[in-house]
Image (cartoon, rainbow, N blue to C red; front, top):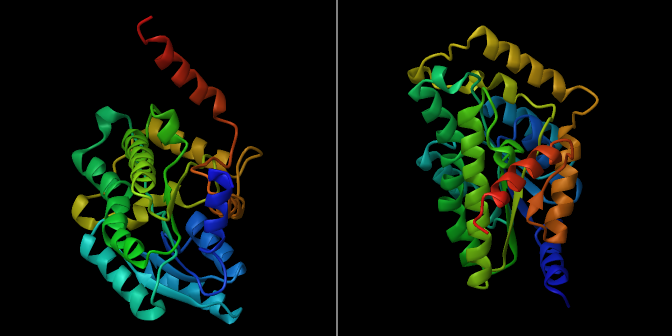
Length: 288
């Protein structure tokens, strides 16, 4: 049996009847679609979101269709909140098989116009949210000694890296890619039955363009320039345009990747030339 076949065989055990998936940012967008995809194949799901009311509405809809679904209000930027999520999950279901660190936000401004609070907020959710998820759930997954899987949601911005007007977002997602690559190597080096994937969607019809709805009051409101707002609206129009993707498509691609034991999950192909150009330039800069 090849390494890929072995990973796929192990992954089959982490999804389906008797299995439990935890998804952050699950009240809408990709997180909601992931929750729907997991219950469609028989898994129980814990929907974690800063907006507990919306998460509960999704969970109730899933329960009406016979699914085992639990909504939990969680602020992924707060390690105590994520630790509580882990405890509530174990108290209810007794195990965790898949963890999707999916919650994410973005600001929209040139770097010169991004405030320190803009940077703090984006990194607290996008990067520290992943770190907090790993800190709380990795001990559980290691202790179970059964196959499990972690999906960290980065972004195509994490592979393109330099993207005007979303500097903090792209930087935080680049960090998520690096964290995921490191985790994969460490799990493999120590023979842990924990699969790792990094999800890098691009134009997808989600609410990330309205991230400010969840911004802490203490960090103040974002003050976008006219150019930045125009860029935000341009990006948003791509989400629903002919090159955009749906959260359901991203979710199904993610489940297939888990089952296949794949690390990279790239649902859209449009940005490939940009990524190729970036790495081609870097490779050309190595000394001969």
